[in-house]
Length: 313
Ligand code: SF4
Ligand code: MG
Image 1 (cartoon, protein in one colour):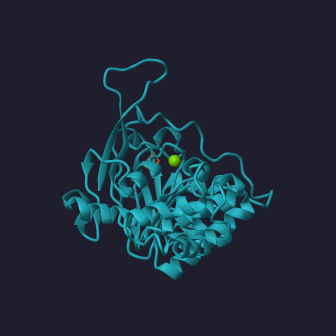
Image 2: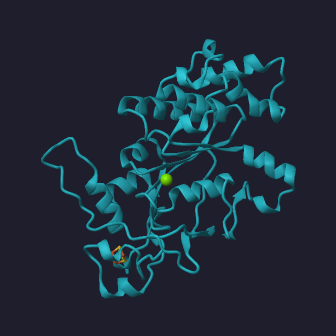
């Protein structure tokens, strides 16, 4: 459960006295072991911030992160470090996270060696195993990142994450920069690894098709709040929240008759000054007077299905 306040950067050339962005506002997320939870929303909705808080890369100003029912902030240093290692993040652009001057062997092998998960003697075999798991040819371990394609570089990033023996991968737009055919290969690799290694995933994406393909459960975010969550089939067949419905309608369809114009009116408001009441009200075709004033709570609308909209009253 987390409320995160980040300091806002310069806004339109002006520096307001105390600019704060509530990047996450009363967000609560539970991920079961072995589950794949998709987090979807437009840019600026807080999905990346949520992923970084869970991964320990950002600290929430309020709230807690529990790992196997234990508060991370209460764990002694060593235990916390071990827990952090169990949650690894895979980013969108593998190139920017791979040191161009390091060989793949070093990129993949440095962390497990440092943490005592392998020895210098066994390192080559250890790295080969991670490369094979990620679908890379282990004979390429002495090459540099630039000698690989974009898809292969993402596989290097995945092998590096696997090398510290994680239980959970947090994938933040991990296939967004790849061609569609390569995207499918990487998504299927994630699903294979889930079976082989009992991995749990938080899968962050703006792309509904990607989220639908990989997730068991989907959380929809809008301007720092969770607006809907449900099992994947339920969400896609019976979306409840007007924002979710608009997102689904906006999906590019291969059938030109079904293809509609942008279903969501207006721009995403600035997170620095989010609209009152329901954050979605300026863009919602069904908004009522109440929506401008009163914040809708996330509540149960079906079996393991929650939505935050006054229309459910
Ligand atoms: Fe639309 Fe009101 Fe529901 Fe918000 S609470 S999604 S504005 S109907
Ligand atoms: Mg993001």
